[in-house]
Length: 251
Image 1 (cartoon, rainbow, N blue to C red):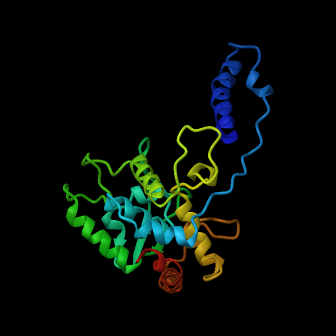
Image 2 (cartoon, rainbow, N blue to C red):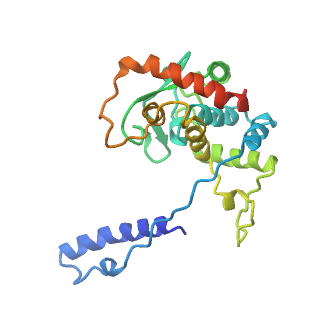
């Protein structure tokens, strides 16, 4: 287990024990004597330019998964934000990212609680329109599932995405220990790596402030609310960067 997971378990155990101590049911909370482990500093792995091209030029069994991956890469969305996409959030040149979806919590706000607007390339807008026609339930989910009320499961996307990585030579180590060199786990490549690629490929081509607004990363210098009046100006700048730096890999 990672150090982060171990610390989370300690915290989980500590809560009821702290309450038991408060109620006088125990004399001491032993968790308080257990030092937390140092935070993991594992750098998120990225695909190379050649790997990105190979990935999106390879044959995918499920177009929904491919489009989900393309949206994460070209729009910088988190997995939960991709799953929670609804057609009511989609415009011809942008996505109004107003929420996220998880199996346990259902629809919820974005990670930072803020709505943001991101540039949507035309090729992806058209792909989303085609998906809408294929949706057997004709509901608002962009990525539907076998159950009408809920969107596709995150594990479904991740499993298919990792299988696709295997097709281009980035093999999954599974339960093998030690983890083989060059495997997906050894390189720490996950679906979230696509969002990191978005940030990496656009960094330096647009202002850091515009990049933060597109990714939804908040800093102390940023205000709590966006100035929506400048979205068109920002999206034009982002569009030029995405079309130059990302679309050549996927279109």
